Amino acid sequence: MPHVAEANTRSVQVNGSADYYGACSIEKFNSAGSLHWTHEDAAGWLDYVTQFTPGNFWLGDNNVQVWMYEEPYDNWQDTYGSDAVLAFYHSGHGNMDANGVFQCPMGGVWDGRDWAFSNRMNIGDDQVRYQFWSTCLSLRVTGAHNPVRTWHGANRGLRMIFGFETVSIDSGDYGKFFWEEWRKGKSFSQAWLDASWRIYSGQAPSVCACGANQSDAQARLYNERLFNWGSAARDYYEWRWYVSREIRSQAKVASLSELPKEMLVAHFAPVVPDEEAVRLAELFKIGSKKDLSLGATGTFTLTGDKASIQVDREGRFEVKLGQINYENTDLLETSKARSIADKMMEEYGLSKGMELELSQVREGYACGGSSKGAGQIRKPNITDRTFEYRQIINGLLSVSPDAGIVRITVDNDGAITSVQSSVKVVKELVKKTNRSTVAPQDPATSHATFTDLGRDEKSLEAAFDQELNSLLGGVAVKSANGQAIVSTEIGYDVAKQSAGVVATRVYELDMGNGLKKLYRVTVPLFE
Image 1 (cartoon, rainbow, N blue to C red):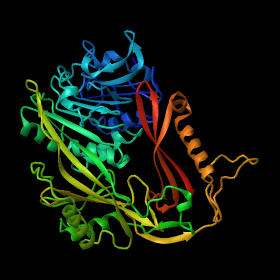
Image 2 (cartoon, rainbow, N blue to C red; image 1 turned 90 degrees about the vertical axis):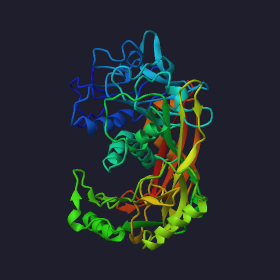
Image 3 (spheres, one colour; image 1 turned 45 degrees about the vertical axis):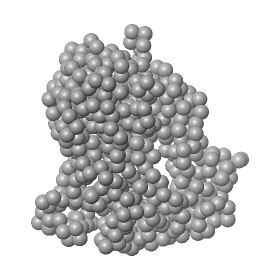
Image 4 (cartoon, one colour; image 1 turned 60 degrees about the horizontal axis):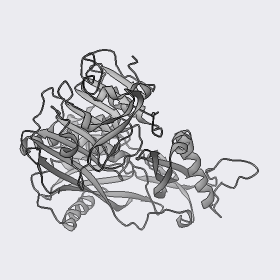
């Protein structure tokens, strides 16, 4: 039996039976449209943890079959299966029916079946305590749906479940970003939510914890950050998730006709990470230069009594000032919470030397309920809000998912719990005469090069189509019944040291059999 999915394994170690880690990733399905990044997703999750303890297995595509998710084979040979390891990671398609039953297609056929269903699972009676479902709609938390309804019947000892309330975007970064966020000192739930937000803010990641009562489940949900072999009681479930509220923007552009007359490339001022860490320590009064430490990933860290600062190689930083008071369910007025965030922006000079605009508000939700008897689910409440300010360059917003942004989180106490920044100071704006090609260059028909005198919407659409088909190899698009455009934005890609103008679009693809998936496509316009 193969142990490793067909993907770039990097430094993933899968060669034993320590029962700590296992993963499945599917890109080619027996009865669904293909995905593109799931092997990379699982590899990113396994890559970090298996350097300490080798994983039991990593199975991919045709080798992922129903037996791994059902009794009596979910702990086969005490090595393979979703209940054979302490922490299990699944990356692929997912869906949930109207009755709250989670379902996911397999890569191969076993016993004449190629779909796994939550109501046929018994998980946690053997080994697993943490189950990661990197799929669409795996952990629904709104409307008639809740984790108790979906997972209580299958749960036999789980501590935590990770998933999504919504359709999610296909990305190879979930697993990698999860551990990057965790290494900042965050709890498991915070790391999962923040990792997803770095990839795409239009989806709603969710996490659930189990416990003997509300306080037990809440403590696990908000604080647990080390894997534990002990099974958790399943009398009470507590969960949290993110929801985005977009703010109307004057700088947001969705068509070529709205672009500024003069297209410019932004060159950014360099940042020295250790000097930036010291500056932030003085600004936020956290630690001092002597407390500065350099981690294995090149991140500089300063830790004070109750706060910490982390600055990465590119100068992006996160300041942790406190814990969200999730026990305060009295909602702070939005206007008051925003004024607190705006005040910090001004007083701490977080936008000094650049222009920023509030682009969206991220609401952190919490809910919970008992599984006893008929069960009772309490009303959801907002625990915190994060105000996201996006950088404006030459009249255009930054459209990078994880760059050109300041995020300030305010809880219901009115306390600022964290500040994140990935903005960059523009050193110069440079005019260039060339334009990037945005469609295949057939000499006989090409008209896709942008110039100062005219830009062609038709060529942009052709470029999006070409990039989408190139990304998916044509497989998923051909097998899909249709596609819908979720959003289109044109602005600066601030992820690099020099920023050009790009057009970025999110598609929702129908992958067949009720399955959907989001894809982001980016086309350079001028760089």
